[in-house]
Amino acid sequence: MDIYYPEHMVKGQKYPVVIFFFGGGWKTGRKGKFRPHAKHFSKKGLISVLADYRVESRHKTSPFESLKDAKSAIRFLRLNAEKFHIDPDKIIASGGSAGGHLAAATATIEKYNDSKDDLNISAKPNALVLFNPVIDNGPGGYGFKRIGSEYHDFSPLHNIQKGAPPTIIFLGTKDHLIPVETVRYYKKVMERVGSRCDLYLYEGQPHGFFNYKHTEYYNKTVEKADEFLSSLGYIKS
Image 1 (cartoon, rainbow, N blue to C red):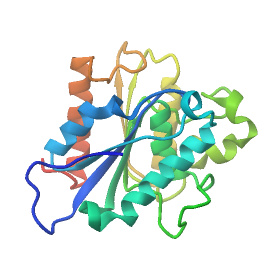
Image 2: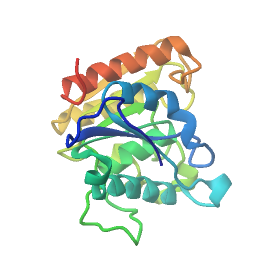
Image 3: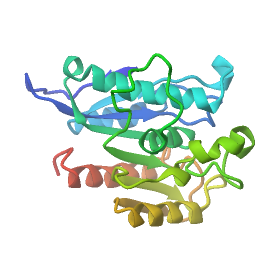
């Protein structure tokens, strides 16, 4: 993990934390992908964490190991909350594409826990900030050929329960991997179980439109994320 702290921290105070999971189809990617986001939110008063996890290209692993690692990362932050000055009840999970899946799955999926983890420590975040996330792994969804029949236990869309954390989702309307209909249905199901789900669609934008190199949409999505987290009381308005 790379950890970015707010510049002016108050001794003895606990801070909300946002943990980022990079994209890459659970096959590739590096934790530095969200470094600009991490630096931005640390300036806003959050502790920001860039988490690594196992991927196929580097570790010869499956998406299931990726999810185990994401859950372990959140448990690690909660277990060491005092050491890292973290408020364990204000953990925000974030990510893009497959990393967005991991963030959403830590909140919705019960299975796929590392055997060395203390399962008495919750891996569920308190809020989600999702950038064109993979949320449907069922037939017709992303990754189904690799997930197969286990999608029932692995796909966030198929496991939304009452108590799911407040969520914000960003998606371009020309995303070739994530259909607009999918995120609209995710929002509908979230609201049916009584959970907040803000959805922002960006006309004509493709997959990955939110990355730092796309300055206009990086700024637009980060601004909306700021507003969302401010409404939850995690950062100052």
